[in-house]
Image 1 (cartoon, rainbow, N blue to C red):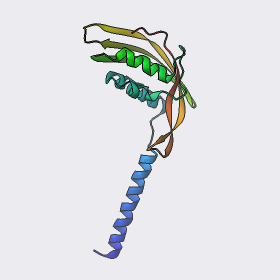
Image 2 (image 1 turned 180 degrees about the vertical axis):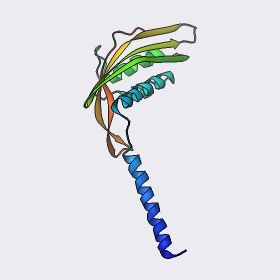
Image 3 (image 1 turned 180 degrees about the horizontal axis):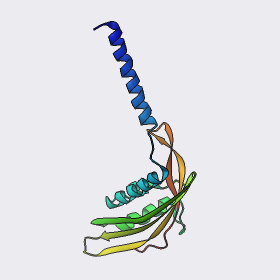
Image 4 (image 1 turned 120 degrees about the horizontal axis):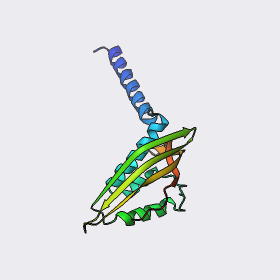
Length: 160
């Protein structure tokens, strides 16, 4: 193979690697409403897998809800409520999302059923209103990005 052909192949490989690295660092993001919907679905799926920490990954470090709970307090409350669960079912319906610049509000009707080994179960169903803000995060530890995070919630009281 000629040296010029080898050089052209090398340049093409370098350009492809640069394009792939750029797409990893700066992915094309879906619209804001879809990003928030994905965050809600992620949190619900994590709760069904009994991963309270995973579900609360969508919370801001500055989270505080209408009941005065911080993210840490909410995590403890959910861990206690689900610690002996054999299964957790979460349903999210009728999500309405209103985006206004860097903040948003979502309103959903959420149902949660927790089955226990004793055969007992707990069920809660209510409307949850979440306030979202786009916050700076680092992807791959170094790449700055913005991601929707929950900064507050209104959900009444929950008895599990």
